Image 1 (cartoon, rainbow, N blue to C red):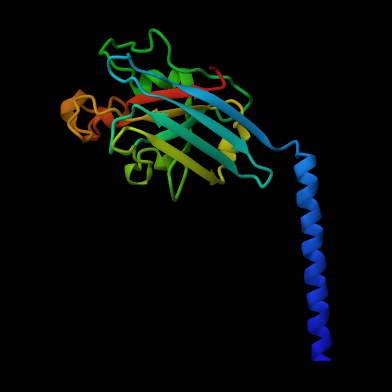
Image 2 (image 1 turned 90 degrees about the horizontal axis):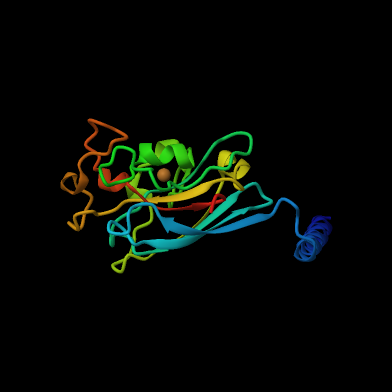
Length: 217
Ligand SMILES: [Cu+2]
């Protein structure tokens, strides 16, 4: 009796595998309408004298309700973590943009986060390498990708973030962090304190937008 039950279980398992195999094959020839992929170039936000970085990004909405974000960038400040976010507006489709001419409204020579946000919107997701991807993770520098010694950065993560998924077709990808004075770290000597969080002691260098790209390209 016991043997028969085991045999039955084996048959059920085998047919389950067969069914899922067929489902996968069907997806290969008939992609789900929910799969959408968007790729964009990433362009420098600051004056070319401050950063000549460049890159590209791909955002993919997956049918399992997750979102995959891939970023490839070069010309970044080497050996430093770079905060990266999906920026946009959470709600009805709103096409934002990357900071253009005149974005440096206070004329200090740098485009800051408060100066960029009117163009690209708030943070919908933090592109961390592990853990949370929400607004609270926006400056978790110990969990953002680090550029190598040549200033090259590669990132790919598939994660669950409903806000990012819902707005995947209208977001801007923004990469932050410029070691303005070439000290090898983000410090207050480079460009002072981040305008976004006065009194925090967070270096402006760590928050400065470097690259931006998205639906508005
Ligand atoms: Cu950002």
